[in-house]
Length: 349
Length: 266
Figure 1 (cartoon, chains in turn red, brown):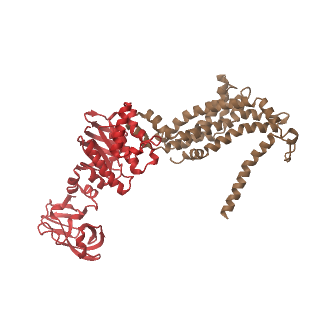
Figure 2 (figure 1 turned 120 degrees about the horizontal axis):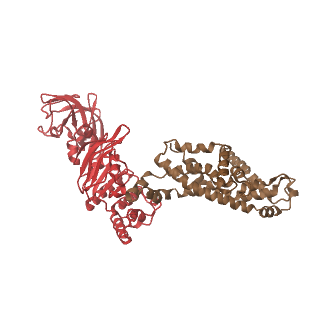
Figure 3 (figure 1 turned 180 degrees about the vertical axis):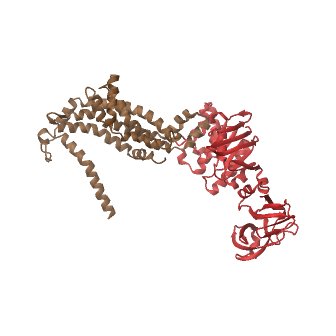
């Protein structure tokens, strides 16, 4: 086990900085998730940590060793790829023990560690099969087993759940967390799925266009997004954004007028999460802003909650409300709503 | 309707392929007299042609062809496989290299044979296998390379990367993980390369047509100043063709994959 530090890490292809001078300090035993849209530089960063991509500049430090110029095999890392990268010509047992045999470990030790990993991941009965005979979920377990037996300082995961179906993905997510808690190994995990990122991360690193937009605990980032990119990327449905301006403590814009807001004067973007839009009466007067009228365009019932598309002028806001309110709401009718005052965010423009 | 048409086409194709073989088989067991009348289908089979061809040293020529073929295949696999890996995974020379590899196949052998002849002459290896093998490599290596590019393209990059993370350097990762994935292709490429070398007449005739005769050269020699010795030639042709037909049968699926595979990316 060891911590990981990236210093001014940059990868340039031609004139484009795919990863632009990022700094990151990951504590020992921490589960860090790099999240962002396609092309944001998260996978390139992970591959630089693995040693599979050479950085243009910057340093990578694992524990107290500068590994920037080391071969992947000398970095003491294990990696799980999106397509699992199991060796098709080897049995599950040989796949799991591959890294140990490459490092010329003692046979008895190899057998012991393979048995331990197989037990941990419930793949004992698969040990003599070939990867082609396994389901996606089983292949995933084997790939994780192969990483575990190595007992590396850092685990690197490159979108390992994205090839699984939705149900299995959630199950494996829980299992991954359980495993990481049990082993206590430092993990760097890459995904484009913000929900998966939120569920797994001790620390979330939101990336876009090769830079780190924000890092912090998942809840902290959800509640206090640093900018409109993070605000819309994290959370589903996305945070509603309405351009306007604040003058003398009053926000106006997009057909809304909200008095006594906590924002500096000037052009701003109002950000409000869908679950912070409530039907009038759902909040006390102290909690709520002044009501506004909106046309209920579409209602999507989800069981416990429902997603509403609300039209104000030509703008659509998405709201998530408790389904008990559905009896008083109908599509194509107007209704009154309020915002949770304490949850409004204002981003300077 | 379509089905009937397809059947007819298949029957025609089978006749086109099988007819020449049948003709050669029949000719090889006909006496000289019977051969003089090609339309004669009722005749007394004889093995004189086979005895003549075997006594005439055809097996020695076959052995020579085997030596040339095997050495050519070993060298071509070594060079072609590494080149194919480099072109597939490293984009060596840019994306167009994979196609330019085949350009050399479009060059008529006549263009190369004179330089090769002079080289062999100056090196003192004319009329030896050392002259024929390099000549065969000129057309076998590009084909093996093209063939193997497709197979390497099909190996996910992550396999090699995983091996590098797991504890191997690049070279070891290639041999331990990448190469085993292309073994079937390698086998098919070897057989295909051997057939190419085995069938060559042109280079073998000009560079080593004297004492070290390969099988096709030996077959061609049945065309003598007294006329074509059809019976013995047919027997010799069968000796030459049967290994090729058997080999092609076993590798046909991989053969198609290999021949089309290199063109998928680019």
